[in-house]
Length: 310
Picture 1 (cartoon, one colour):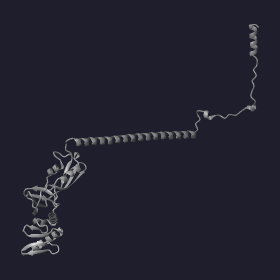
Picture 2 (tube, helix red, strand yellow; picture 1 turned 90 degrees about the vertical axis):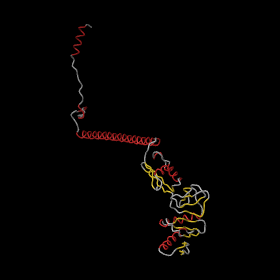
Picture 3 (cartoon, one colour; picture 1 turned 45 degrees about the vertical axis):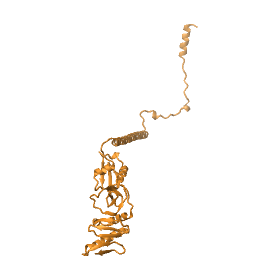
Picture 4 (cartoon, rainbow, N blue to C red; picture 1 turned 120 degrees about the vertical axis):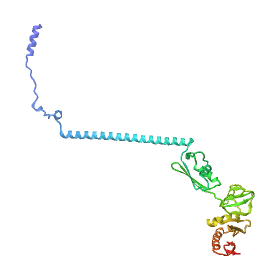
């Protein structure tokens, strides 16, 4: 077939009518419009709900953020407090260590109850010299040292805040003088030897005569019954009457005799019932004071006390 013939054939074919098949009327389906696809459609209820949910989410995020901030702040404050406490403890420890080792004065040592001993004497008895540093002192050691000192009868040592050591003491006082083989010994109310000497010093206490004790040492306790009974008698007298007693003769254990400043003998027997005899002594001395009769002696026998006239 020639080119012209093919062209004519194509032209004839292109001009043929086209028949389209139309859908049957019964096949039509109604499709409602999708309003959600419309950009201009915004349902009010859904928008409000979405806004409320978003608001809740924002509020929750904000509250979580605030809570986290508070937690971080609390942790930071707790850490700072721990660091401050650690720093304070470390500073106190370093200060204590410095005061413990360094030769520097710190605090005060207060003494109460010393009548004849000076504060310097008490400090020396405590083992303190030069300066007072209460950190370097031990109340227990001080109390032990003081109780060993014969000049001190009793002592209580306490540490008080912030930097004070309080010493409350009772001095040992001479109650009588006894004769020894080499001189005299001062004894307290309990019979402890607190001082020795070749002669009597200016101490206004009664002297016990009639018996010389064997060699005794400082700190010894006198166990002689006559002397101990006489000490109980002396301590049972009132201070005014005690000042009038100058001597007690213990040479006869069954016939102890006390003498007043007027050389008036007071018979004490064996020294038993010393407290009752002291009370009788005071009564009889008052009776003698108000009489003009010359008195030979006073007998303090608790069964039949009497004032013997000359």
